[in-house]
Image (cartoon, rainbow, N blue to C red):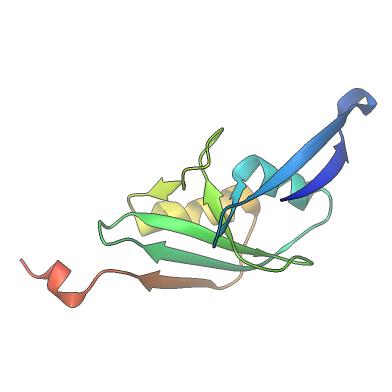
Length: 114
Protein backbone atom coordinates (compact mmCIF):
# COMPACT_ATOMS: atom_id res chain seq x y z
CA UNK A 1 0.00 0.00 0.00
CA UNK A 2 1.35 3.40 -1.00
CA UNK A 3 0.66 6.66 0.81
CA UNK A 4 1.47 10.25 0.00
CA UNK A 5 1.36 12.96 2.67
CA UNK A 6 -0.33 16.17 1.66
CA UNK A 7 -0.38 19.38 3.66
CA UNK A 8 -4.04 20.33 3.94
CA UNK A 9 -5.54 23.65 4.87
CA UNK A 10 -4.33 25.07 8.18
CA UNK A 11 -1.11 23.04 7.84
CA UNK A 12 -2.61 19.72 8.94
CA UNK A 13 -1.39 16.59 7.26
CA UNK A 14 -3.71 14.47 5.16
CA UNK A 15 -2.81 11.14 3.64
CA UNK A 16 -3.81 10.20 0.11
CA UNK A 17 -4.16 6.43 0.11
CA UNK A 18 -3.63 4.29 -2.92
CA UNK A 19 -5.20 1.01 -1.91
CA UNK A 20 -3.68 -2.12 -3.39
CA UNK A 21 -5.83 -5.18 -3.99
CA UNK A 22 -4.26 -8.22 -5.53
CA UNK A 23 -3.84 -8.32 -8.53
CA UNK A 24 -5.28 -4.88 -9.33
CA UNK A 25 -4.71 -1.49 -7.70
CA UNK A 26 -7.55 0.82 -6.73
CA UNK A 27 -7.70 4.58 -6.25
CA UNK A 28 -10.51 6.92 -5.23
CA UNK A 29 -11.45 9.95 -7.34
CA UNK A 30 -10.60 12.29 -4.45
CA UNK A 31 -7.09 10.89 -4.32
CA UNK A 32 -6.67 11.29 -8.08
CA UNK A 33 -7.75 14.93 -7.75
CA UNK A 34 -5.27 15.48 -4.90
CA UNK A 35 -2.51 13.85 -6.94
CA UNK A 36 -3.27 16.13 -9.91
CA UNK A 37 -3.40 19.24 -7.70
CA UNK A 38 0.13 18.45 -6.46
CA UNK A 39 1.43 18.46 -10.03
CA UNK A 40 0.91 14.83 -10.98
CA UNK A 41 -0.50 13.86 -14.33
CA UNK A 42 -2.36 11.04 -16.02
CA UNK A 43 -0.36 9.06 -18.58
CA UNK A 44 -3.19 6.92 -19.87
CA UNK A 45 -6.89 6.26 -19.40
CA UNK A 46 -8.56 2.98 -20.29
CA UNK A 47 -12.27 2.22 -20.11
CA UNK A 48 -13.33 -1.40 -19.86
CA UNK A 49 -16.83 -2.71 -20.45
CA UNK A 50 -17.97 -5.63 -18.30
CA UNK A 51 -20.06 -8.54 -19.56
CA UNK A 52 -23.08 -6.66 -18.14
CA UNK A 53 -22.41 -3.47 -20.12
CA UNK A 54 -21.04 -1.35 -17.24
CA UNK A 55 -17.88 0.69 -17.82
CA UNK A 56 -15.01 1.05 -15.34
CA UNK A 57 -12.11 3.52 -15.48
CA UNK A 58 -8.45 2.49 -15.29
CA UNK A 59 -5.74 5.13 -14.90
CA UNK A 60 -1.97 5.17 -15.32
CA UNK A 61 -0.34 7.88 -13.21
CA UNK A 62 2.90 9.58 -14.21
CA UNK A 63 5.74 8.54 -11.93
CA UNK A 64 3.96 5.43 -10.63
CA UNK A 65 3.93 1.88 -11.85
CA UNK A 66 0.82 -0.09 -12.55
CA UNK A 67 -2.73 0.71 -13.47
CA UNK A 68 -5.29 1.97 -10.96
CA UNK A 69 -9.00 1.21 -11.05
CA UNK A 70 -11.20 4.16 -10.07
CA UNK A 71 -13.38 3.29 -7.07
CA UNK A 72 -16.52 4.68 -5.48
CA UNK A 73 -16.55 7.38 -2.83
CA UNK A 74 -15.65 5.84 0.58
CA UNK A 75 -15.60 2.35 -0.90
CA UNK A 76 -13.20 -0.05 -2.53
CA UNK A 77 -15.88 -1.15 -5.02
CA UNK A 78 -15.20 -0.05 -8.59
CA UNK A 79 -16.98 3.07 -9.82
CA UNK A 80 -19.14 1.93 -12.73
CA UNK A 81 -20.75 3.94 -15.50
CA UNK A 82 -23.76 2.68 -17.45
CA UNK A 83 -22.79 4.66 -20.54
CA UNK A 84 -19.35 5.08 -22.10
CA UNK A 85 -20.02 8.78 -22.79
CA UNK A 86 -20.52 9.38 -19.05
CA UNK A 87 -17.20 7.68 -18.28
CA UNK A 88 -15.41 9.79 -20.92
CA UNK A 89 -17.06 12.97 -19.59
CA UNK A 90 -15.93 12.11 -16.05
CA UNK A 91 -12.31 11.73 -17.20
CA UNK A 92 -12.43 15.03 -19.07
CA UNK A 93 -14.43 17.08 -16.53
CA UNK A 94 -13.24 15.63 -13.21
CA UNK A 95 -9.58 15.07 -14.05
CA UNK A 96 -8.98 17.43 -16.98
CA UNK A 97 -7.71 14.55 -19.11
CA UNK A 98 -7.89 15.29 -22.84
CA UNK A 99 -5.53 12.60 -24.12
CA UNK A 100 -6.40 9.36 -25.86
CA UNK A 101 -8.78 6.98 -24.12
CA UNK A 102 -8.52 3.28 -24.81
CA UNK A 103 -11.76 1.27 -24.93
CA UNK A 104 -11.89 -2.47 -24.30
CA UNK A 105 -14.70 -4.90 -23.64
CA UNK A 106 -15.28 -8.25 -21.98
CA UNK A 107 -18.51 -8.70 -23.95
CA UNK A 108 -18.65 -11.22 -26.77
CA UNK A 109 -20.44 -10.69 -30.10
CA UNK A 110 -23.10 -13.18 -28.99
CA UNK A 111 -23.92 -10.81 -26.08
CA UNK A 112 -25.13 -8.20 -28.59
CA UNK A 113 -27.41 -10.52 -30.57
CA UNK A 114 -31.10 -9.93 -29.94
